[in-house]
Image (spheres, rainbow, N blue to C red):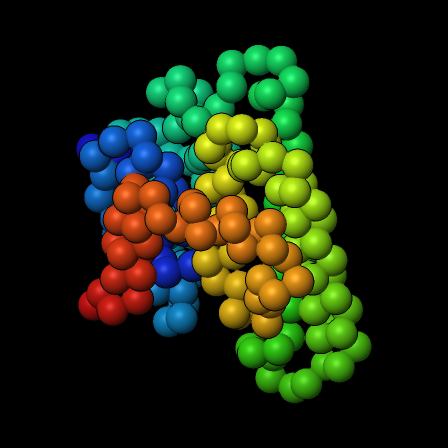
Length: 206
């Protein structure tokens, strides 16, 4: 049985989505990051970086949501092309998400909603960057159905996490019609709906 340590966060939801899409059995264990449980010694033994999600498969422990997505796709032979330009496009979007969209959304949300003192320059900087990266993704999706081409892949799962929590970053779909179209299609997938329900429930777990 695969075990996923997670919370109701943009990065956490990616792993249940992949697992539901792949039809794999797994157990979700809540790590309440609002209470600082990710800094507890037993969790740090799994991930010294004190972040969720974490995947545990027997003695194998893997951190970083993108790495987990790649591992699951490669071990099942699904959600990731096996080679060529199609595979490269998936990694292109994974790296764009990890280096640009995800940090921009995260920092925009932090400085708007979490920072102890207002930081106008940081809010302006990261809010603009969140909107810019969303515009980049919108341009990508103008050319094809999914993030890396005609097929649903782990690139779509990666992007979906932060678009699911876009309100935290103060971002909407109004200026990104292609993202809005894509998001609605991904959100309607039964596996995605199951994963969202299970992940959201972690916020109310004891």
